[in-house]
Image (cartoon, rainbow, N blue to C red; front, side):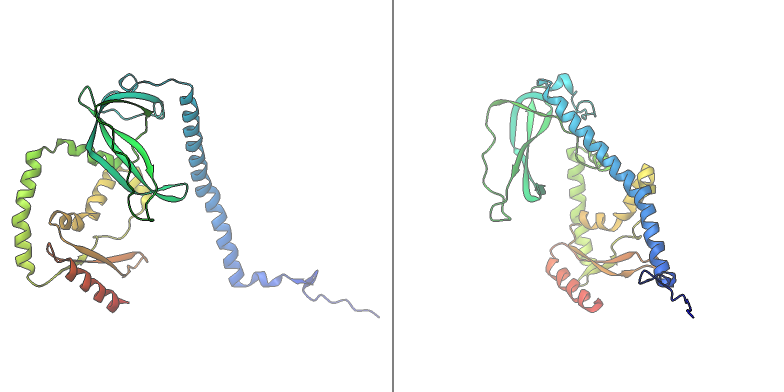
Amino acid sequence: MSVWMSTGYRGDMRWWFLLRPGWLALTAVVICFAVAAFTLLAPWQFRRAAQRADTNTAIERSFGIPPRPLRSVLAAHAAPTQNTEWRQVQATGYYLPGAEMVVRLRTVQGEPAYEVLVALRLADGSNILVDRGYLRPAEGVRIPDYPAVPGGEVTVTGRLRADALDPRVLTRIRDGRGVVGRDYDALLAERSPLQRRLADELGSALAIMPTVRHTAPELEPLERDAELFAHVNMTTLRATMAGSYLDMPGVSLPIGFDDDGLPVGLLVCGATGEDDRVLATALAAEAALA
């Protein structure tokens, strides 16, 4: 007589453990991640791929178009559009060596680099920014020696590039065109009495305050609404802008999380020249809060 019994095994594999709460939770997390990947991450990657394809197409197309005079392609103070970016142009003028700058924190093929930019003044009085290229750091951290720009009139052939700044940041920079020299001098003149008053008020003390007045906001509403972005941005920078204007050294310390689990920070700052005391106090506070 033979008896058959079910042991819960199938092919030497026991499957019922998948019904445990931990495995059910893990399965739910995997499903949610898969949904997010297909509905959120995949479209973002496709958009990046499309943008990269458009850029490659524009670059390839530009090789078949001979360089043209800059002002026949781009008007003064105008920004390159999708139809004009990467076009080859020629510009004639004089380099402004005093306006040359070296941009840090660049990477070329995964390696650190410096980018050299210099202004070129055209015959119509306008200036354009010329990217001279990249430099490999000397000894890993130092800006290496490189040739100076040539003197006299030069003709430069290059490709048009759009601004790399965030459009909202660029808008604020362009708004600064309305600030004339006398306004800037007046702000500096008003700053000195405020700095002295701040130093007298603080005495031997330091100022302690929240780094920002709120925790990190959701990004999507800010990207949709320019006015909301401007309001939140000014609220975010309220304390640090005042400190920057008054030349106050400061250190922001992470001190915990709010009820939603978002990080909050504490700003330790002092009057002008109090850098050492601010740093020492910040180190002591960091050790006490650890």
